[in-house]
Image 1 (tube, protein in one colour):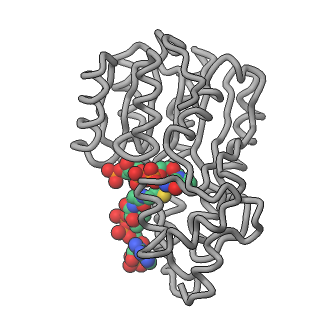
Image 2 (image 1 turned 180 degrees about the vertical axis):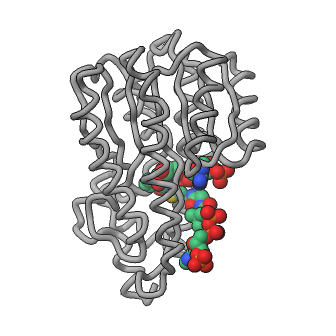
Length: 268
Ligand code: NAP
Ligand code: COA
């Protein structure tokens, strides 16, 4: 597979990755570690984090598993502190923790809406805020994982869409405020990514073929393709890029209401 992989690119750097225990977040953590970074993995389930940490260490990398709910600022700040104590600082913060499910707005409970806003949007702010002091010392960078739902009206996901749009706005605002500290703040907006929890929740039984037909490139993306974009945005190659959201979606977002419209038409 083609790659912008550069061995040693992130040598002597430390990254903290929320949602690092599975899926896209785990893929990003492993990729950063493979390129030399020490990686702190954050999520609620310690066992998942420890498994990824063991994989990284078995591959010769350095990793730390730190369990925290991104909605709890003090717990997350403690995880950041653990990473700093172990590795000496923070150069990169990657916000990949999220929650999503299909639900019509007409029946979604207020608590269901709030849960997703809390995890995605507040969790991303909490990570950025808890890392600010350390990122300003290292002139580091933040990348948040958003989604095409941030940009296009998408049925059955008003909670996730509002949260991801909020993260993209937060990305621009933090880029504006923190550029003077040398901190770059960007986002990567994936389209549907194969083999992930996200797609198993959003493409229920049999919907996969239908959804793929609504992606201009006629396929799902893969975790490797998201890691490429994150690597680029964290690397010195992106040294003048801040406040950006990079779509990695095979053209999905070009389709207006998006591939999930068919689910709504079918009574989703
Ligand atoms: P995933 O494997 O479920 O990853 C989400 C991670 O977030 C899990 O490891 C989960 O671990 C963690 N998490 C959830 N709530 C948390 C909380 N309150 N505090 C701390 N950690 C929490 O799903 P994924 O599909 O790889 O998604 C990863 C990211 O990509 C998300 O931001 C998602 O919105 C985005 N994305 C995915 C797709 C896709 O096609 N999959 C498309 C667009 C965007 P615990 O449950 O153990 O906490
Ligand atoms: N449809 C409608 N509402 C739902 C739902 C669904 N499929 N799943 C959860 N909710 C509602 C719950 O009913 C609850 O609302 P209520 O109190 O009014 O009944 C609210 O959401 C919170 O649910 P709870 O299970 O207490 O939240 P949690 O904080 O433990 O978990 C979620 C958060 C709901 C986002 C959970 O799905 C999760 O942990 N997801 C992480 C993994 C993930 O989503 N990965 C994909 C990333 S794209």
